[in-house]
Image (cartoon, rainbow, N blue to C red):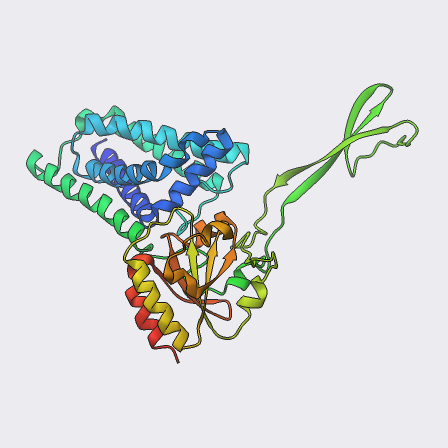
Length: 373
């Protein structure tokens, strides 16, 4: 039993640390996934707190994983782990059996798991954590209490520090479809060999005052319009496919309502796109951005603000740095995916992302723009 318990602790601890680190690379991604669940359940009042929930949950995953490995305060952490895995299993089970969520975001965007894979993973973890829970009194700490406290203290600092860094800048490992080197128009198309959803069409007719239903390939032999009166039809997905482009709902619309997405992304010249969400905060980055755009003008590089902010609002006392950009309207969800920091500046050529920087790293953008041919 001692060996089995040690193996269970190692697997649970390593998986929780790994899961936390992967999500710590992009806490906003988990925040958006939480909003997706809350939208389904109608809990919109929690939308403003999802980032705080995300940061806290990610930090706890890493801290709990370390606590399990060092065997510190197992009476407390065995309870917390059990409650957490029950919650995770509920979420992944809901995603699987409701069919309303395609992926649960367990390992973020870097390791996308299907709903059934996530549910199976959580069931295995539930069994291992139950083993730890019922044998928690047998676990002997690896270190003395003081050393364990020091390890957990620095783990806590690290867990929050790495998340602060990626929120201020950009994810350390970019797993998003807009990552450096990707071609945006290519990612907007359905991948070759993708499998579409498999659906069954069901018809409902009324016959002799009663409703009868049948599928498209099971029409009754006595079917006749004078006997069967149409009521409705429905499409039911019996097998989900993967015929979904990596980039969805990305369109660039001019002030006059014209879709200029393909025209701009097919231009064989350097362009700068500033992805701007409506809750951006003014700061010193605006001065740096102004210098960047002056350097861009010398290189004949055109700039565009990609935003969901209404044009009228954007043009009301705009910062001087914004005057060098042509505003383009874009879906807010697409902007959230493209810009993990608000704002984020992209350097693009012929639809390919050459580089991108958060507002906190615009000094690097200046050097890149100045070095352009």
